[in-house]
Length: 412
Image (cartoon, rainbow, N blue to C red; front, side, top):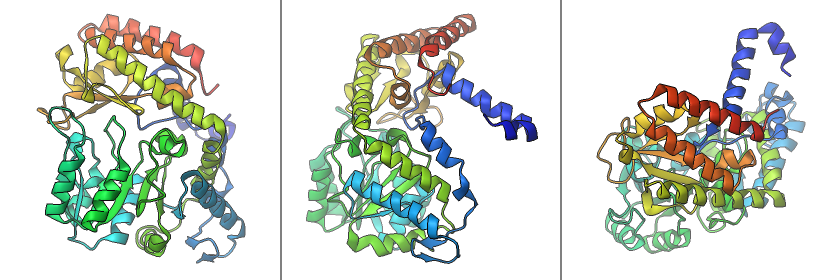
């Protein structure tokens, strides 16, 4: 594999294989990551990479797009079927540009909108002041309850009716519980504002019916195509037909030029995979694994945000171990366990030195691990965090992790 690359650029070739080895010999627990299938990977490295295709199927600014049109239309049709969408734009390059295009289609600069606070489970593009969303639009942030760390829909309704935003955003990046999207729809109808969701993290769970799918009755829904959807690193925008023209114009020419058609081809493959019955079984296992991993960590004495999970991710308050989230991330990496530091609700630290870590089960589930393996993974995590000052012990744990992973090699 990669024979041409090896002959031309052995340095990059070796680094790519080193990254493959890291992925296969360690425990990837970052919930925003997954492993694409060999079929998706083949589509990513394929001939559509060579083609410019500004515009949309049947309406391009370049010639020679008769095959590209078929590829993009197939991706659109499969996404529509998968999510029950009236309209889909498959051209956004990633999640943040998808949200940028969504805002551009629905809002004017300075308009008021509402999203969840970054420190309580939201995303930078949900209105944080350092992000374009918080700079271009007048974002008011809602939060979770201090005691339960859960959304309080009555309080959100009251805040929305008082603030009168033009847009209300739900769907999050670090909220471990199910979301009552129908209640958000009710709030938006009462307030007369746009009803929008970013389901980037739970897209695969929504598509497979394990979590409520807001696409059929929300105005606009964005999602990345990796994470629980297990596709290439990219995004799509789904919307009601009445918003289709605005969304399409916001993506092109409003934001992007030529779409990445090789990635769109890979999205089409991923959507086909997600339409198979095996994908629902996979999604079910992702959630089962997350629940067992959460339970085991609580048995070890760790406090979890909301005391558990309904989806693929877990937020762990690591202060029990006498370290911060950034220190925990570093310690676990030394043991071959990969996570990301993360704020927890009502954070006492900072985003760069928070109190928690965020872990998830999409990658481990793709590799074939199930409930019993989650108990072993929890033990590895606990052992590593308790060995934070012992490099020898951490090195041994890393070797044990590598040995454990030999039975779960996804890329041969």
